Every structure is written in C-alpha cells, then in structure tokens.
Length: 368
Ligand SMILES: [Zn+2]
Picture 1 (cartoon, helix red, strand yellow):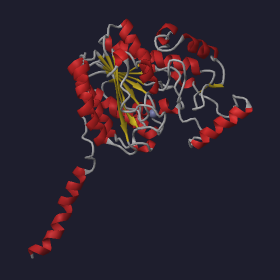
Picture 2 (spheres, protein in one colour):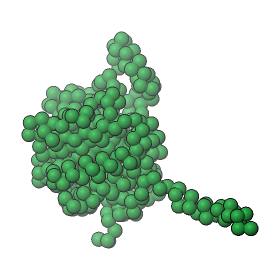
Picture 3 (cartoon, protein in one colour):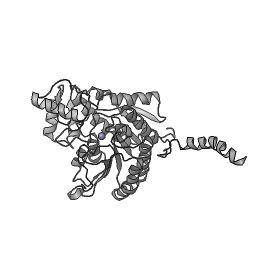
Picture 4 (cartoon, protein in one colour):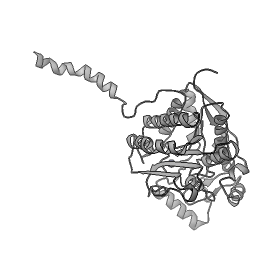
C-alpha cells in the first residue's frame, strides 16, 4: 500500500433511475392542483431539483479532474432488515408496493418513479457499504455519493426528496452489526435533519450535531432548545443559523461547540450528512469551498483523535450543479490528504502582488 491516504467514493448507477415525472398527474384533481400550487410557491414549479444530473455531474468532474488517492467502488442495495432498523414495517410495506409505479408521497414534493424504490434501497445500502469499507480498515475515509438523499425521511414518512434515511440506516447498521458503541452524525446540509433527529431523539448512543438555516426555513425544525429526551437528552445538538451565515460562523460552531461535544461524547465512528446547499450558489447560506474544506479538516482531526480516523460522508442536498460537484471534490481532496485552504483568503496573495506592482508608481512623485 502506498503512503498516499486512500479515500473510496461509492457510486452506483441504479441511483440514476429515480426520476419522478412531474408532468404526470398522480393524485385526484383537487389534490394535484394543490401540490402544484405549493411547488409553484416554492419557486420550483415544473422542475424536480433532486435529479440524476446531480450525481452524474459529480462523477464527470471527478473523471475530468481526478483526485489523487481517490478510488471508486460500486454500492449495493439495503435489505429490508437494514431499513427496518429505522423505518416502521408498515412504511416499508407501503414503499415496496410503490415499486415500478409513479406516485406522489408527500405534499412537499417527494415523488417516486418506477426505478425509485430500488434507487432508494441502493442509496441506503451504499451508505452501509461506505461504513463497512472504513470499519474493515480498507480505507481511512469514504464518501457515499447517493441519491435520493435521506435526512428528511422519518420512521413513517418520506419528506423533502428523501425516501429512506440513508445516514440513519448506516448508523444503525454500524451499531448493531459492526461493533460501534457510539456514533456521531454531523449534518451540515442547509436544511435541518428532521428525520435523523426523530430517529435518534431518545438514543444516547447516537449524537446528532446539526448546523442549518433556522426555522421557518424548510423543514421548520431544529430549534436550539431541541436536545433530545430521556436517555438521549443532550445527544441532539442543534445550531440554527440566520440567512447568509458563512464560513466564519460555521467554523466558530465547529470549534466552539462541536469539538467540546465530541471530546465529551467520544464516538467510535463519525458520519457526515454532507449537503452542499449551504454554498452561496444555493442562495440560503454562504459557505465557500474553503469553508467546506476547513470543516472537513476539523472532522478529519476529530476522527483521528477519537476513532482511528474513521470518517464517512453521505451526500444529502445541494442543487446548484457547480457548487455541488466542486464542493464534493473539495471534501475528497482534504480526505485524500490535500492541504486545507484557509477560508476567506482567496485573492489575498494576488492583492499583495498587485500592491507591489502598483505602489511604486504612487511613491515616485513623493521621492522626486
Ligand atoms: Zn438541504
């Protein structure tokens, strides 16, 4: 094995077959009109922003500009038993009945097409494949490039483009099959992980640290005071952000809240629900590529300190294809051992060079 740090990205083309056809009316007339009106009010009238191009764009960028040390592996489908650790059996029955159908599942735009159920099984199973690779010691870190995303999916409900809760299925598997006693999930997607929070709300063995755009931004959950219940009180850590919050605020939250939380919790494995919609191009927040890189660097340090480096990323949202694909690439570069760029200094060296170039012209007259 070379001394280069290896990182494995998991990718599976079956996830491209989830393509809800929004032109087909799925519901009785009145309901259909209501859903379309809601979509239109959300400014996504007739396009489904969570589409297969999200994954293919990432894949193409990584082929065009390969990350040294990055390898690809194919994913796999999750079993009913694996999904059943976080979803109810009636929910799974309902989802399996939708195999090979077109349907709307929820008013907030979660729809399925004939290939969707298999795509969702593969998204969850591929997240499991990523943690297995890390826990088997085949790689220090891994990134499950999956869709449909998962963190809004609740035990009994599909929501916000999410069918099965991929990161929760992976965490539950790590706990029940792979000997992880305590698991940390860090969710930096712009939207709060209502589903992940629900699933582990009373679980003292899974800590959720979630930094997100504050309510009433979708899905409207994740208040500061929501800290879990019973044995799980204190293992839900919400950090709501105002519109436009960026690198400085995110890194402050990581350094001043996440690091002490991890020192206290002592996880055996760190999972990251990585959405790239906090990037400025998705308009809700203002995290830069350097910001994503710096957060990844902190997580890598924490993983090395507490869990032999075991760090697994699972893709969540991110709808602007440029910031999504470049954001993923930036994270992979850090995981593969690349330097962590300092946020906010893009252009500073150029300004210094420009100053050195221009200033003598302004000084000449004084000297004469
Ligand atoms: Zn999101």
